[in-house]
Length: 385
Image 1: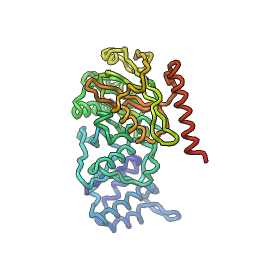
Image 2: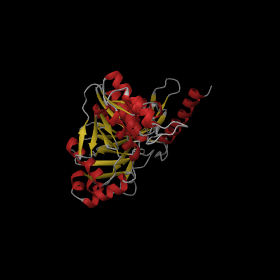
Image 3: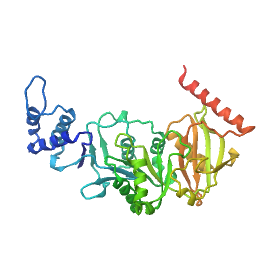
Image 4: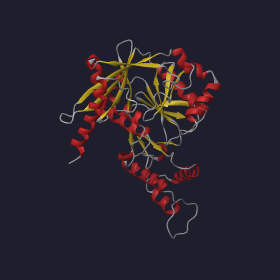
């Protein structure tokens, strides 16, 4: 059994107090004495004590796991504010002392514990989902997992469709940043380059919808050799993110042959997804131009045009995977976007809301109205008794 314990929620003072206290634990029963002498009790005069309940919970964790699984404190890998990354199907932990990333092996019986944490951070929800998808992925154990939902929809949509990552998402990296510096962003880019072997990378902020204004394309090798560009990325993306607001993620850049926007809604009777409208976005800006821009805001940095497609022209494979993403996220209605690569593979971009629905005249106008009407009818049928 390989055990990691996350102490990052503690202050430095509380962390130092905790490590000082466990020096006196030589057997499970010693924990009781530590609590008696070093934990605050109401109306009892004590010195060199704490009333931080997280410390108390961690002491009890030591006693319980030592009694039950024969894991002593010196066998526990204690983690305090070290950066972590989910890169494709692997978990990486940064070792600041050695200035290197360590991949947490997929050995059986590897566990990460904590008694308390940020229940709305998408990183932990992603961690937990991967442990369900991959049998030997480390298990995350802490109370109240049902609280770990987030408003970071884009990452959540990707997370819920991750069982088909290789087929429809491609390379993906989600960081958890405790330590934020130019070295942080540099280490992330180096990890991507060394593991994915892909020089072009998209940095995205997870927003409900952004029209590409929160997306930046960069060449990893160029940035690793340019301190000014690293400084800019740090200031724009990393300096204000922390373990409680992990809202950036990384994907590969793809040369896009076609880009589809598909409008689906559930049928009120069958609960099957029906396609109501299909559009194609044509990008008019070259890759070279994109690399020179710090944002890719559509209509400003990224020039595009739209075409209306016949619903029947949408490939069956694309329709199938679009419905898979909708079903995985339990959505009633929304707009889903995919790109088609030159090798005929598809990659899931995002799910968007309906504002700015790119309505065309005549038939498409009727289709969009039917889409929204069906949306409300489904909800009436589902939620109103």
